[in-house]
Image 1 (cartoon, rainbow, N blue to C red):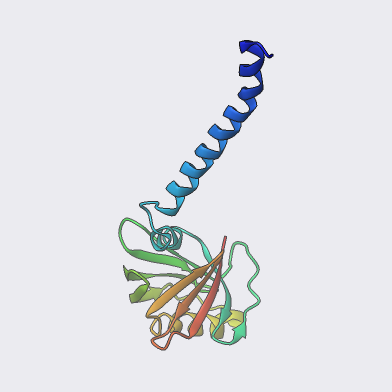
Image 2 (tube, rainbow, N blue to C red):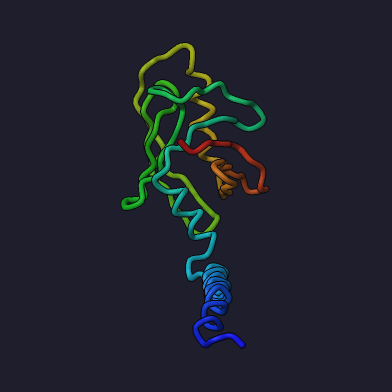
Amino acid sequence: MKSREEKSGSLLPCVKLLWAVLGFAALTTGCMSASEPVEKAASQMLVGTHWRLTQLGDVIVDNPAGERDVHFVLQGTDLLVSGNAGCNRMFGRYALKGDAIKFDQMGGTRMFCEARMELEQKFLGMFGEVSGWRITGNTLQLLDGAGKAVGTFEAE
């Protein structure tokens, strides 16, 4: 017959396993009923991120990351958008509600850069078509009213 100490020693691994299982169950249950929905987390990523243009409509854009990459950033506190349109700095305002977004008062500086002026004009024109957004991984798509991507961006 086993002594009391031998019995409790053999139960210790079982007790540890039980606590581990219960802890894991509590952790995963907490994650499934988190108070912050995925949509809110995605909208937090949308704001304050450097979004580098990779595709404009159906056209893939050669836009290496760097000093003059075509990009925008949504400022979180003042609802301003800023960035670079390829040659010139750009700025404007935005309104965000759920997965809807509108851009307004878009403008920029007016330097001439022969190589990127056409891209810059198309990029700035895109903001007038945007009515929604979708983030998948590190990719942002700005969508028109029909849900078609008018601009695709990668988070930097």
